[in-house]
Amino acid sequence: AISVSAHFGPVDEASDTRPPFETERAASCKMKIAPKPAKKPASGLAAGLNKGFVVTRREMPARPANMRRLSKRNALIREVMREVVGFAPYERRMIELLKIGSASTQKRALKLAKRRLGTHKRGKRKRDEMAEAVAAMRRKGH
Image 1 (tube, rainbow, N blue to C red):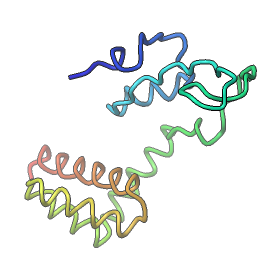
Image 2: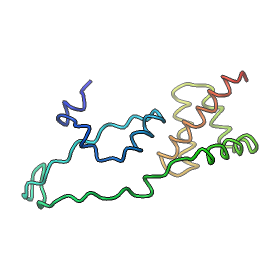
Image 3: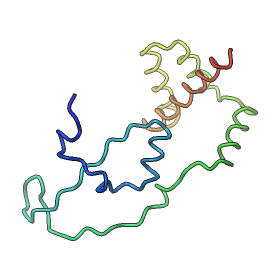
Image 4: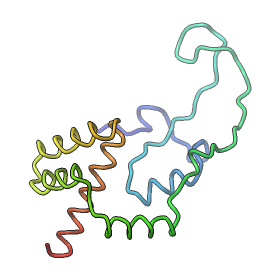
């Protein structure tokens, strides 16, 4: 296994340009986000690894789209709604596929979610959500 520091050079925690909540969310959601390598300054040349005009980088404010986080109130509302309404037909089909548990059915569940939701990222998130629902059912004793 190649470490990130071996590939990109030494990683400095202070130079991580992502907002702190993004790394906190990653830790809380058990997402694996590799640290961003520090961008080397432009060389002023038109070609090469660090090509480009030499400019001073501005520190941009955090964008509202990146600051969204699920509040406790909304989490509770979603949980109650899920209990009352249940699962959509395609979600029930995904749960059946995930209960089997083989790699091919995992892939099939992702394909189904992608087709219904439009993007790979949304499909992966939905598959993880349904896998969590299956695990909760097993913990409950169904």
